[in-house]
Structure formats: structure tokens, C-alpha cells
Amino acid sequence: MSADVLVLGSLNVDLVMRVPRIPQVGETVADGRFARRRGGKGANQAVAAARLGARVRMVGGVGADDEGRYALAGLVAEGVDTSLVEVVPDQPTGTALILVDDAGDNLIAVASGANACIAVSAGFADVLASGPGVLLASLEVPVDVVLSVAAMALDAGWAVVVNPAPAPPPGTSWPAGAVLTPNQSELQSMTGEGDVETAVRQLATDSGCRIVATLGAEGVLLCTGDTVERVAGVPVQCVDTTGAGDAFNGALAMGLAAGLSLTEAVRQANAAAAYSTETAGAQEGLLTLAQLQSRSRG
Ligand code: RIB
Image 1: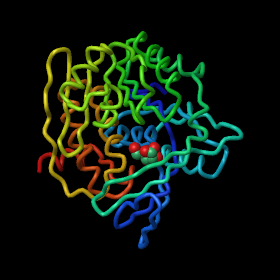
Image 2: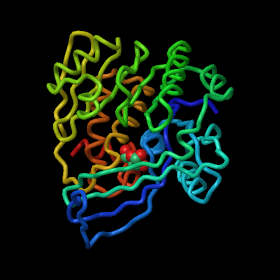
Image 3: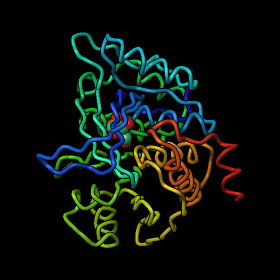
């Protein structure tokens, strides 16, 4: 199968504890509620794009364990092609421990497992040759794999979106022509600059990329060349921000694959991300296209 959106990234099982507040170091907070859910930035982004109607193919890795089968079954149920997801022997499927507080804010620690062991397979070049589309990559898989795959995709005429999450090592050199989508803390880590507008201009100049900085409730700052544009946040009743960035990136990739301009795709993704926070879980709140259109009509 060809793909409109090719997602390179992690598949995790999320072990989520909802707590009244995030404990401090050395502190215990009681009254938590536990849930096991499908997650991983890559898998979340794949589901986000698929629910909005894109044909999605996933590249990643899972262990040969029940968790891996659980993660893959979720993607298959969403219509995502998983034929390029490697089953990595002797490695567990990635696991994320997530605390979510009453305000919907979170704290996440990830054990990468199989996500850290993927390589560029021969099948990947065949997918790129099958037609232009959008490559969407995030960084819970090895950065060198992402950079080499992004360069191959750009050479093949694909649009490339790199979500630099978690924050990349200092000095990472990005393929010019890509779209980078850091959140505020990733942007600061990548540039050393606290002022968001200065930081997006600096990153755009240094990388030769277009920058789409996601600012949570403050919306998005979009920098293309010398121009900086702000897209306002969408007011919502936030329950859980986990995966909001993934909702944004999946919707952005789907919008670009559907032929929207970057600005139009950012506006759609901004709404998709905001509405995703109204439901608990990284994948549970991802909207279908019909739901997004209905919410956006108000
Ligand atoms: O972006 C949210 C995701 O980050 C979670 O699903 C968790 O698996 C971590 O990868």
C-alpha cells in the first residue's frame, strides 16, 4: 500500500496514573486512578492522521511480547498499515509511565525498549518510491535514523515534518526544507533562547526549515523565512494534555497531504489538538474529520 502519511516514531504502552496533583521528589500522593492505554508519540500521531482520513503507514519497532501485540492491534483497528513495524527480538515494547493531575498537566518517563533498536529497512525506500506524500517523524526513535530517513524523503520529493520531541541532542543538524514542530520547552532547549519569537526566527535561520512552535493554550507561532504569524489558541475544557502535541502533528501531516497550505494545515491542527485535550488518554481523544468539522462549526 502507498501512503499519504508515513509516520516514523515510537509505539508505547502507557501506564497512566491520574492523581490530584503531581508529587514532588520524595513525596507520595494517594487517591490515584490507574489505566493502561496505547501510546507512543509515533503511534499517537499515526492514529491522529488516520482518524482524520489519511492513509497512514507506520515505521517503528515493538518487542515480541503481549504489549507489542496490544500496540499493533490498536493501529490495525484504526486502519494504519503496520507492515513496516519491526518486531525486535530480545527487547520489550516501549513503556511510558505517566502522571496526570487534576489540571490535565502531565509528567512522563519512557523506557524506549524496541523503539531504540529500529533501523532503516529496504522496504522504506520502496515506500518513498511509491509516490510523494508526507513523512512525519518524532524522536522517541534514534535521531540518526530520523535524520537519514528525512533526507531520503526530501530527496524523493516528499514533504517532511519533524516533531523534535523529546528535545534532541544539542547541535543536531536538520535537513533544510523540513517543517520542525517543537513545543515551547523543546524550542528553548534547541536554541537556548527564552523569547519564543526570537527563538523561532533563530531556529528557522540556523536550520533552513519552517518552524511551527506549539504553545499549548497560547496557540501556535509559525515562522516561514522572515515572516512570523501567530495562530490563537482554541478555548476548551481541558481534561488531559497527554498526546495533544501528537494530535497536532498528525493533523498537520494529514492537512499537508490533503493539499492545504502550511498556514491552513496549522489552523486545522491547532483545533484538533485543543479538542483532543477534552478526553483522558493520548489516543482516546483524537477526533475524526467529521467530529473536527462539527466542533469547528461550533
Ligand atoms: O506524547 C504523548 C506520548 O509520549 C505518550 O503516549 C507516551 O507514550 C509518550 O511517548
